[in-house]
Image 1 (cartoon, one colour):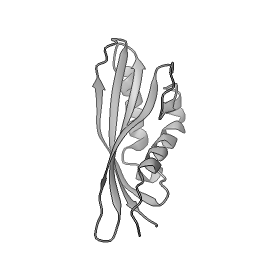
Image 2 (tube, rainbow, N blue to C red; image 1 turned 180 degrees about the vertical axis):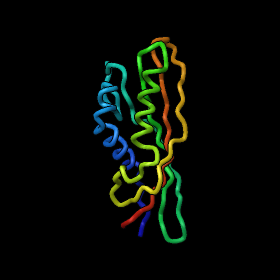
Image 3 (cartoon, rainbow, N blue to C red; image 1 turned 90 degrees about the horizontal axis):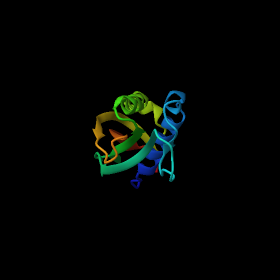
Image 4 (cartoon, helix red, strand yellow; image 1 turned 120 degrees about the vertical axis):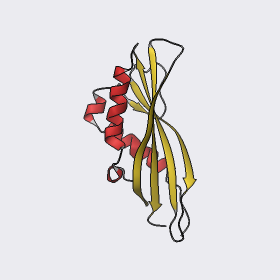
Length: 139
């Protein structure tokens, strides 16, 4: 068996999970991988990832950190925090909710939720990061 990276598949599964949720859809204008110019706030962008091998003697595994960005136009953090909280509810400790072809999601844990200042005082940038462990199930 040759190791196959599930990075794109994991990102796709996260995107589909977030995009399909009616509660989150009511909170944001969209969920994006690439944000089109002029997109209205608030929105969610599937961001950066880091993937490292997590192999055992007889399995190919990956440990992936996936970053999700929440962008709002507001002077306070309440709106962005509510969106970040909903994202956590959809993903944290819910490995069975991510379908990744050829891989089993063993665990998904929220690592942190952080707010970063933006030069524009009307904009808030929340970062939510998850650690996802997968095991390859087929060649």
